[in-house]
Image 1 (tube, rainbow, N blue to C red):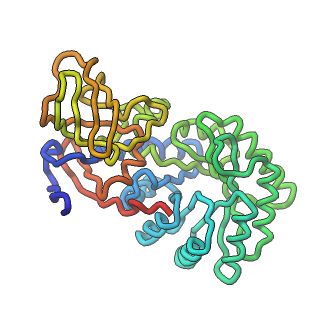
Image 2: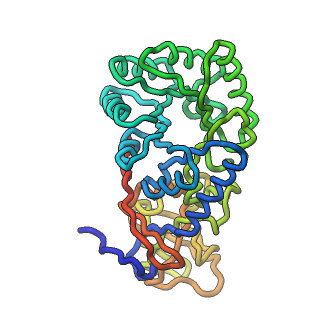
Image 3: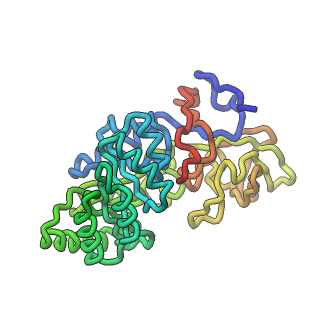
Length: 362
């Protein structure tokens, strides 16, 4: 059975919970704030849609001045291609025949598709599969300190770029990194050395793509980069507040939840568990910030229940039936837990948007 329809103009506190809410004004402000920074520093901006997975938000990001969008998986990119987007960058090594088949089909129908690779194995797979079709643009992913994917040295980056450029079915499109927060000096050192090596071998490098929300306002400290990618900034979350990127007043997403039990004076139970808030801690010891009761602590989650410690809350405490708003630790995961997002302005529902790319994780 589907959730009851949500009426435009309804008071958010009249809605059934748990429910993710998006503040229209905060969302618009976040988009404008970051785009203005990128424009001021002459950086192209490529928002990552994994935070919202909603085409209308991506269109608002492009309307503000973004150059294209960043997807993480092929199926996400397919949804956004269906919505009319052309300049798509997929920042994930694509391995295996089924995925390559879908990637080739996507490449045939849009003009700006780009992918990444960080090994000869990945490049070989791409080169072989695209041998008889439209050439594919490929960026070399570099590990500049983030410790995830990426070649480990500038020399390895230049060697892989040469391999891509020598393939008749691939086009070398540039370098890409997802660095650790506040790692601008290390990132610039790696990229500038890699660019020098590429130049000495006669290879043009059209794109140098840097990324990340936590320290994105330091993006100008990586002068070798031509573009920056970020996703979480659109909604922001508790982790971004801790990182100093945003304040709680910049957090556009709240999870509306209802207190369903008060077993003891110091404990409340809400109807939002790991299926609504996510179990991601991201270094926190609890599972979200409660707007109305900032001293309360969400100490545990089961699938459908959230347990709140009220022992530090002075004065009025929530009663059974009360609704509260929670800033999640990690907003991007929440987007993948719900079929739709409810938008509001000043507590009044403005629209409901399907999360079009929900669950598309390959």
